[in-house]
Image (cartoon, rainbow, N blue to C red):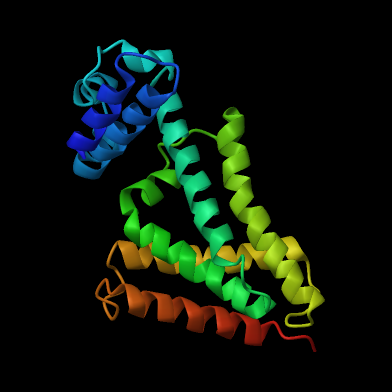
Amino acid sequence: MVKKVRKIVEKTAGSYRHGNLREAILIASLEAIEINGVDSLSIREVAKTAGVTHQAPYRHFKDKEALLAALAQDGFEKLYQEMSKSVQDINAPIEKITALGVNYLTWAAEHPAHFRLMFSQNIPEFETYEGLLIAANSILNLVLLVTKENQDGKVIRNDDTRSLARQFWATVHGVTLLFIDRQFKPLKGDLKSGQKLIQEIILNLINGLKPK
């Protein structure tokens, strides 16, 4: 990871025009969190890892809180991109909602430190940072959209769409946390088993929400 950061910084050759310094700082920060946790994150140490002066990060982030908010926003944006991509070529609503859940767990399993950070108590109120709020809401809006498609297709009953979408998200999120923290021992961190469990849980939810 350090080599990757170095390459990004070297490529900029001291120039801020292309935003590569900001990317290098984000990568270095995430690396530090992966190793030592979010509480020990130090902007000075991040700057050292990125190979820049200790004042350089402040060109992009006014303080540690702003840096954490940017990291969380980046995570939500990347998760949204992957989830959106997973349903692009799917037409059946029930398959779409299942794909979203499976992709949610898959991304979290591949980026556990980033995923935990996005929902950490260390992150400030989303409303404080507009970009973070928009990025987080993009996930909910995607789940809302696919939930509504399931309602329109008579797959699930026509209850409050937002409430149902939150139920889907909360259920998948809970299983995902158990999985990446290896608290659900029957899965033993096996990604395919985790993906299969998500599929089964979503189908059970859908069966319980069938129109009367």
